[in-house]
Structures are given as structure tokens and as C-alpha cells.
Image 1 (cartoon, rainbow, N blue to C red):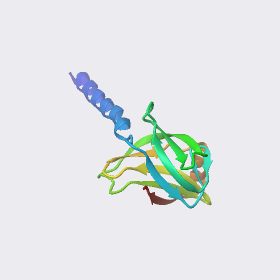
Image 2: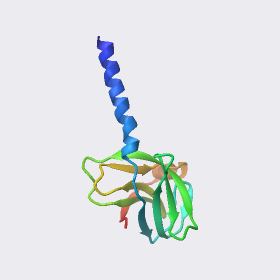
Image 3: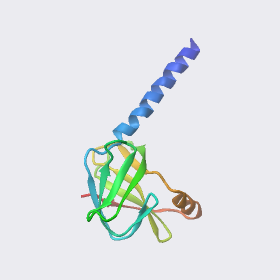
Image 4: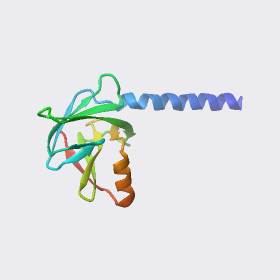
Length: 139
């Protein structure tokens, strides 16, 4: 009987974890503007205006595209959870030295956010320095 209880609890937790990625998706695109270049995944993006576009095929991928369409990258995301719904939509960056990395995306009114899966370069930078965190509101 004890093993059956453990199995039921494990299945319940597994079910909850499988729902998290669905809850972390954004329904529409979000726009933001930076005055600095940054990395999104392995791509270096110049300062400018960008749109975050959800993938229609895979909820764990987002496209970051410049408003002029010249620069675009797909990034893997990891669902994150906040204790309360986020008060406004924004994007968070981590800065190591003079290099900026896109870190998180929050959507107004949602408890779930999206963390950009860190690259090897960002992981290495994080091991050598503390991140300076800052955020930009989305449009």
C-alpha cells in the first residue's frame, strides 16, 4: 500500500511538471528596446528594437527578432514560477563585465515566466563574476 501511495504522489508531481511549460507560453508577441547589444542564446544582437515571438510548434522555444527583421534567433526557455502574478511585462538581463545576456521574460498577470537557457559562455562568465541584473519593460 505504501508503494502505491508513493507511485500516486510521483505521478501527480510528474503531471504538474508537464503542465508548467504550457503555462509559461506567451500568447502574443512582446516588444522591447535596448540601448545596448546583448546575447540571446549564442547570437549577439545589436542595440535596437526587438519582438519576442512564441513558437507555434514548440512551447520551449522563443524567437527573438529585430523589428527590421535583419537579426533573429531562436532560444530555448525554461519555465519559471513566481509567488504572485507579475505586475507588468518585462525582460531581464544579466551583465557580466561589459557583456549582456537576455535572462528572463515575464508577462503581466502571469505567475509563470520564461528563463532563457544559459549558454556555455554565460555559465562561464557567471562562474567568474557576479551578475548585475536589470530589466526593461516591454511595449
